[in-house]
Length: 156
Image (cartoon, rainbow, N blue to C red; front, side, top):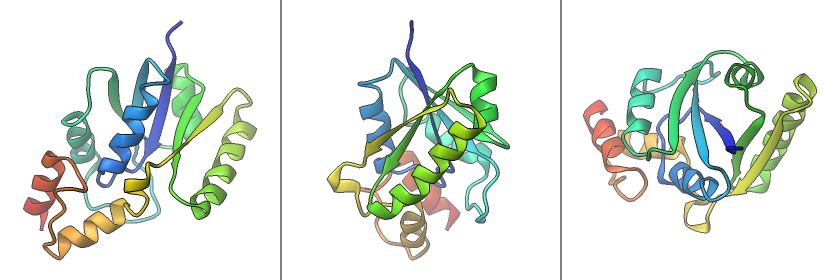
């Protein structure tokens, strides 16, 4: 049976840290669905369509990109899946992610969350930091894929 997991997030924008998690998750799972959430409390720089297109431009054939609105557990049910991938950079991430994993499990007891530690070279990296740097015309070429760097340069 094929092992498929969902890697949800806002990906506004996707970073090399996200891609590192996807690459390492593919050593555990046969396929990954990157699920771009459309409902977020913070204002997005990139539209959902832009984020999906950018992610598709930097992942391989074993990765499918989709967007979803509403609860992750509902998206999982629609896909017929129960495994979620989440990444952790620091202890502060764990508190939030652990709470979300327990909430998802409460909503659907079949949902399992697999936590992957961010590689040490990306511990400092966040989408928020990338946006701040790009807005101030800093070189972000080592932090994001080329297509994302170009899109952010055009945006600002």
